[in-house]
Length: 112
Length: 111
Image (tube, rainbow over all chains, first blue to last red; front, side, top):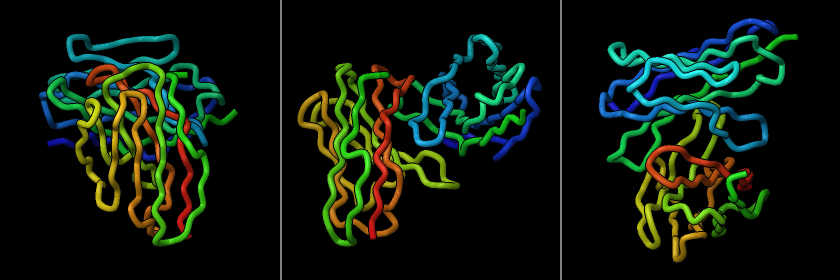
């Protein structure tokens, strides 16, 4: 019930295309869903986050889509650029717990 | 940057020796976390702290201990390092139970 399942494990997208990474969860008590971006040799950095009272959040080329009934959320990267090549992690947490529950990560490669 | 430093940034040590990694924050955040990151395993929580002298175990705590005697410092100790503890270690901080900000990491090699 505490797991967050992330797919795909790796993804190759052409420059200018749309990158889509999906996550699914079981615990309906989760109330915060962030996405982190990690470049090689660096720590993960918060990219964008959503709470379940909205179905979509957009920041520039990055959008989170949230489907509460399906217990799924996804990251969309529009007009993907080579600089977006990184590993992306989804996560989930709840107010009563001090921990983020992490997905396994997706290695994204954008081909020029 | 979120005002987090980790030291050392790289360390090579031998099996059986004790090792201490330090995380230092300038943000006065309440929560601090230690993770390890290994290929194929993503981020795994070792220990976390929700206040000075308040700590608890994460999913991979065996062989590790932590201490937090002041808000700004969170120490991770490998009591007797083993080769399976070769990893990249990340410290993270959070003001509340949501957004975590990560340090630059410590690459530890145990020979």
